[in-house]
Amino acid sequence: MSKQTVIRKMARGHLRVGGEESALRLLREAAGYRWEGRLFLYYECIGEEIEADGLFPELAGLLAPWPGEEQARNWVPMADVFHFNEPASLDHWLRQAPVDKRAGRVARLKPEMAASYIYYHYQLQEERAFPGPKFEIIGLHENVLFGYQEFPAVVERPEVPGRLRTSGTPVPWTDSRMDLHFQPWPDGHLYFKPAETLFAVYGGPAIDR
Image (cartoon, rainbow, N blue to C red; front, side, top):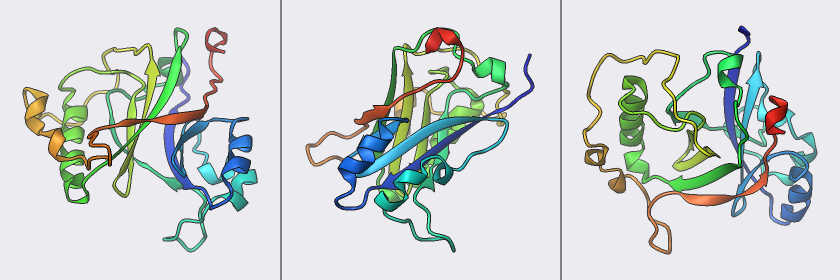
């Protein structure tokens, strides 16, 4: 079994006004998701972390810089706030069957409910309260949630033990009142909406190329 580790990364970028069409031509040769003028990346590193700013240097002039650091950033990392499973090793994380679809989705939290959302989801995640899709992950930046999913979903017991020994996850899960955490969309929809797929590539086994 390979001892190499897999590091999951998510990042968010914002297109400059007027740069959208040029950026899309560049991105379609690689991978990511778009929602309105915002771009989202999901990628996996083997062995060492690669920052998003180093992946697409051609986009530097088309993305609005994010403040907050001494050096301007084109991409900001999104915090991993929920996953059902995590890589135990490279072998554990290789896809064993073809993936029909890799999808991105976006939602907005009420800012005052972000801490509650993280609390409930970390508890669910680390208590291993109930199983879910192995490769699904949700990232957070400001009040924007980005979710990555693969279909058909693979559901299996995590190999990495949970980090909590409590049993506080609400049963049923609907008692967590996630409906109170989300900021409604202008059309009244409450939860996640699909993001446009710009690219989806995989460098694993030949079965999934």
